[in-house]
Image (cartoon, rainbow, N blue to C red; front, side, top):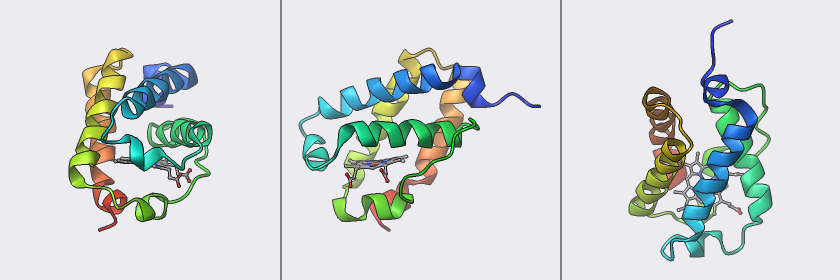
Amino acid sequence: MSQTIYNEIGGRDAVEAVVDDFYDQVLDDEQLLPYFEDTDMSELRAHQVQFISAVTGGPVEYTGEEMRAAHDHLDIAEEDFDTVGRYLQTALEENGVDEEDVEAIMAEVVALKEPVLGR
Ligand code: HEM
């Protein structure tokens, strides 16, 4: 079996640490906070852990909504998408994910830009 990014970065514990650091940064940003006002953050963190695990090849099924449907009502500005992407990148780097894996994960994120922005 070939090595997955999920295993390479340290599995479930690593993904949980990344997601925690990621949302800490997001919720610390006044410009982003309003998007999350009506959101159950423990549910969102759990879905984000599943989502990142699934895209990195982990043995986890993502049970949340499809990306366009999940973000449609939020009317997200492109600038804010870019900021969120930077926070995810920082969270990955700060948790010791190596550069090649960060690049692979960020390529997946950039590929979701249009559906997340509702285009
Ligand atoms: C590619 C980038 C992104 C990914 C992979 C992503 C992933 C997700 C996932 C997996 C969910 C959970 C859906 C569910 O629970 O059914 C979600 C929900 C959400 N996302 Fe994102 N997201 C991204 C970008 C953004 C951006 C840029 C913002 C805001 C600036 C944002 C704000 C939210 C909010 C507020 C929710 C919760 C919606 C609700 O409570 O109804 N997301 N996202």
